[in-house]
Image 1 (spheres, rainbow, N blue to C red):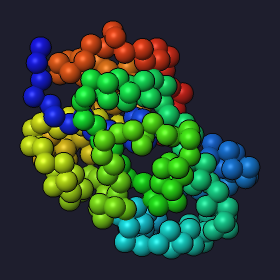
Image 2: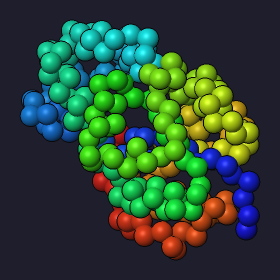
Image 3: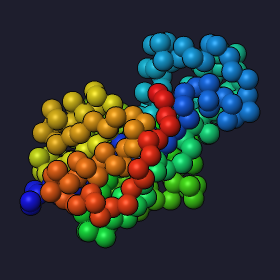
Amino acid sequence: MSSDIKLVAFDLNGVLVQSAAGWADACRRAGLPVRAEIANLANNPMITDTNTQVESGLEPMETLLDMMALVTGYTPEQLGRIFEVWYVEMTPGAEKLIDYLKKKSIPTALVANVNPMQWSILSTDDRFAPLMRLDHIFVSPKMGACKPSLEAFEYVEDNVHVDPEQILYFDYDASSVDAAKYQYWKAEQIVFGRNPAKQIALHLTNYGLINAQRVAVAPAATPQAH
């Protein structure tokens, strides 16, 4: 089976990279006590809106840390430590999958929302070195927009010179998958924590790009929650 796909693009969290299993786990990884207030951040529109602004490169990281400190009782420095340990390692099998696609000369891209503090770690820490082997890196601070906004997807299109219909995208977030499809990308939702590399390999096989049986991705599920 042949394929007209010219670019395979990936989200970050829960697709290529494993994160802490929520705020409580991140606090423990940072060596901090778990405060109940931090669990409610996702329900605070002021925090979520500011986070989007920071991830889009429109507000400094300090603005978010100061605002979160007022709500949670942690210091900005402690919150910075929590963000620094949020991403743990590549998901099992992700590195093999990236290298296999490169061996097959299939162009790849990262399309991800991430704040500048976390990206400075992801882009330099040896744990995440396989990310730098992707052909294109599109992170929200550079794009000036966050998914699922259409501006983020349009930014990618403008910089890869590939027709939207020729892009295959993997993301765990349903709203981002829907936005990609609205842009005429081919997109597949990855079930969070259930061996993402194997899911991706099977989708790539269905699209006629690879043979999943030839990619030695990890058979075990990834122990994540979100």
